[in-house]
Amino acid sequence: MREYKVNRDPNKSTVPSKEQIDKHKDFATLSHKYEKLTKRPKKPLYKDPKLFIALVVIVIVAYLITEVIDKDNDKQKDKQEQKDEQSNAETSGGTGCAMCKEKERPKYDPDDIEKKSRFD
Image (tube, rainbow, N blue to C red; front, top):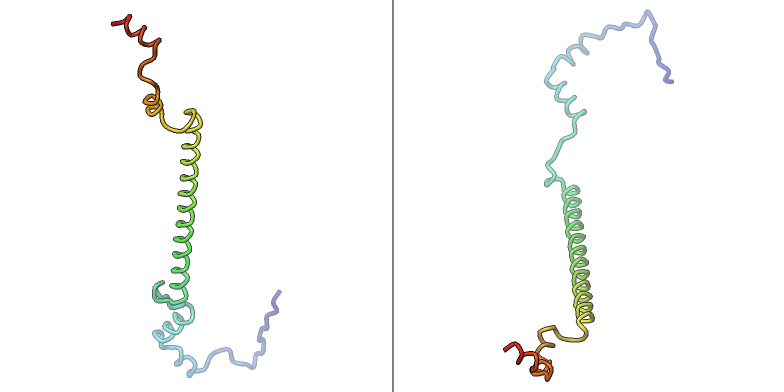
């Protein structure tokens, strides 16, 4: 707790002198001095060099992070597409597509010829 010093000397005058009163009568300068002491001058963000550099660094870091994330996503998509292609090739029973396999089969099968002749 703070200790307060109270002047209780009856001989000492508590009323300020005429000079002190006249010194504080100019309210405009007193108000200006008060504003200068209590309020800090505010600069726009782009005029304060330290804050401007900090903002630029933050923007650059955010841009780099998004670029890295995009590259990782592209790599994962490419890997997934390769896996899909491999799994499709394995399930189809070898290399090539189903249309190519149809072309590789012989056009005339002896059993098929008998079936076709019945329907004609």
